[in-house]
Image (tube, rainbow, N blue to C red; front, side, top):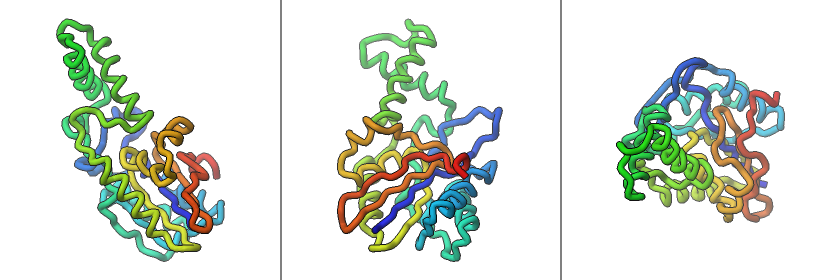
Length: 228
């Protein structure tokens, strides 16, 4: 059997801080270790030992992978892999969600023939929220974001193909990129209908393939640090 574990990095904002939309161009450190270590402890509890560990080349993803490896007692080094870096949020990079929804809402209003200045802030926010909801439900990329969907999907499929028989591979990435990983199952629409594709920080996703069959999702977005 082949096993592919995909995990999201730990927290980059402390409790009480206003989070922003952190993408490929915003390289933040982790602010805690619990969720990262929880990934390793959870995999150890399940008896899963990665033979290789990859991580996107950002501080938050590399450090998460390193902490998880420590808890696994895994001697293999963490390898940086550019393919799984977070998406680029374009003009919304490092902006608050309120600002993001205001921009997207203004665009949506104009597309509908409305003048944003004639709407209330709440109405503009609601229009922007629709775009974010589509991103969270079906990975529909909002206008202005720099996301090469086909390339990301191809990268996940290539990674799945790289897993050898009997091998387990762990890849630590980010929320925007990970939501495209279920394309390896072959039916992304069905997957989106059954799952919340937004993986929480420290979340663990486990895919397996038996005897060359299609990849099956065994766990998606498991909050490892709560399951120990």
